[in-house]
Image (cartoon, rainbow, N blue to C red; front, top):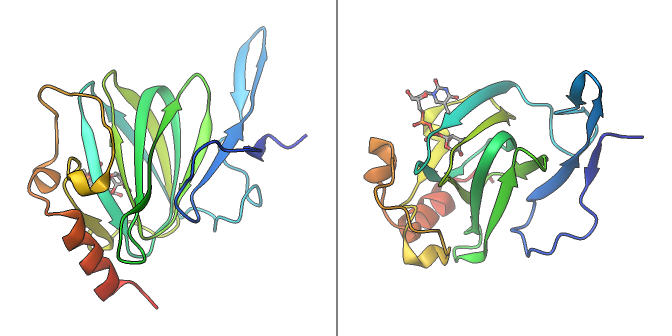
Length: 184
Ligand SMILES: Cc1cn([C@H]2C[C@H](O)[C@@H](COP(=O)(O)OP(=O)(O)O[C@H]3O[C@@H](C)C(=O)[C@@H](O)[C@H]3O)O2)c(=O)[nH]c1=O
């Protein structure tokens, strides 16, 4: 039985190309084994880089959209809220927040052009596979709390943000940069 499966009926209206794959832990008296990534388990090109992220409670990463690379995201422990918004047609659509939990493992595939951010109230550890090796110029950014995103984030008193994300512009500016620079 394949250990990586597409979720049969996602209840969410996800941006085009975003996929959620159920991961199957195999548990026995020794503990647990779980396939994290299987080539051919999705239409994702094999990742060329893997990153580990540990995020403290109250931290925010993003919002980002990538010009070229696809992210393959698996939360290993804790809880992460994945905010998604599609601006590839020049307007915000299909905004939603997906809860990714270490105790209910899924892989999220986020293609280029989908604006996404990682928010947590309790902290998490995740791995992310990148379809291309990282290049900072591939990241477009906007404010995580831009109302145009239409994302109903939980209240975080003092969110921990990178300097770049704290200084990011609007979703409209990100969408304009995407439309001007996206590979055709
Ligand atoms: C992404 C990345 C960062 N870095 C370095 C740069 C910097 O010193 C430090 C933290 O990087 P950043 O602030 O860019 O990390 P962060 O803001 O967490 O970036 C991540 O945000 C989420 C929302 C995503 O979409 C990911 O693809 C990635 O862009 O790590 C690498 O060396 N390699 C990498 O692949």
